[in-house]
Amino acid sequence: MLAARLLSGLRPHLPAARFHGIGGEQMMAQGFESHWPMDKLTVRGVLEVIPRYREIKGIQNQLRDQLLAERPAAFIGADYPGFNLGLEEQLKAAGIPTIHYIGPQIWAWRGGRIKKIIRAVSHMLVVFPFEEEIYRKAGVPVSYVGHPLAELIPLATDEAGARRALGLPEMANVVTIMPGSRMSEIKYNSAAFIGAARLLKQRDHTLHFVVPMAGGRQRQYFLELIAQAGLQDVELTLLDGQSHTAIAAADAVLVASGTASLEVALFKKPMVIAYKMMALEWQILRHFGYQPWIGLPNILAREFLVPELLQDAASPQALAEAMWQQLTDAPHRLRLAQRFSDMHHSLLRNSAQESAAAVLKVIKA
Image (cartoon, rainbow, N blue to C red; front, top):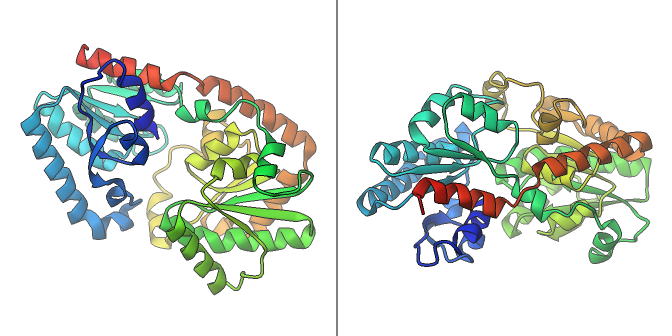
C-alpha cells in the first residue's frame, strides 16, 4: 500500500521509468514488475526468520547483483528494515542513491540501528511527525510525508453505512475482533481473543462479534484454532477482508498490536490493544523496548489512551474486562474520539505527492 501510493505520485513525473523489484498487487496495478512474490518475505521475528533465512538471503543477494549491474536511478526500500537496510547499505556504498520509506522505529527499540541507517540510507521518508527531528539530529536527510492511512480513512466515520454493508442491525452492539493477519499472530492471539468474546457475550447477549480475516488461509487456520480451544460455539461473523468496514461498524475493537491499532484510532473507535507470541521470543524482546507503550495510538499520544495487554496479561478474562470498560464508559469514548480526531489531522498529508517529491529531489529529476 505504501509503495503503491509512492508509485502513483512518481508515475506522472517519470512516465517512461521502469519500476521493478519485489512488490504486491497494489504496486503491480501501478505498472510495477515484481520478480518474486511479496509473501516470500512475510516473516516476523527472529524465530520465524531463522528457518527461512537462506531463502530470503538468496533473494536479497540476487536482487543486489541485479541492481549493481543495472545501476538504477534509485533504490526505494518500503519498510522491512531487516531486509532492506542490508541491501541499501551495499547499494549506497556502490554509489546508488537509497531511499527508505518508513523509518525503523529506533525511538521504540534497537536505537543502535541508527549507525547502520546512516551508512545505508541516502534519504529517509517518515510517516510520523516526531520522527523527522530524530533522523535530522542523527544526520540522516529526512522528509515527513504524512501517513497514507490518514488519507484512506475518512475523517468522519459512516457507522450506519458500514453496518448496512455487513448486514448488521444499525442499532446493534458491535465488537470487532482483529487477532492479526500473520499466521503467527493468529496462532497466539485467537484463542484468548475469542475466549474474551465468549465472556462478553455472557455479560451482554445482544453483542455481535465481527472478525475480518486477511485471506482464506488465515480464515481456515483461525477456525481450526477456535475449534481446538473449544470455542466454536461463539457466534462470529467472519469476513473476507473488509477490515475497514468492520472497524467502522464497531462500537469497540479488540485488536492485535500493529498498524491495525492505528487504523482503529483513525476510525475514532475505542479499543483494547493486545499481543501474544511464542514464550521464548517474548522473553527475548520484552527487554528491548524504550517506551512504556507498544500500541501506535498510545505512542503518538505519549500516554495510555487505551489499554494494552501483553502476553500472559492478555487472558480472556482481562481482555473481556478491558473491552467492557471501552464499551460502557461514555465520557471516555467521547474523549477518545476527540483525541483520535486530532491525531488524524496531524497525520494527514498528500503522501503520494510528498513522498514522490522527496524521491525526485534525491534523483534530481
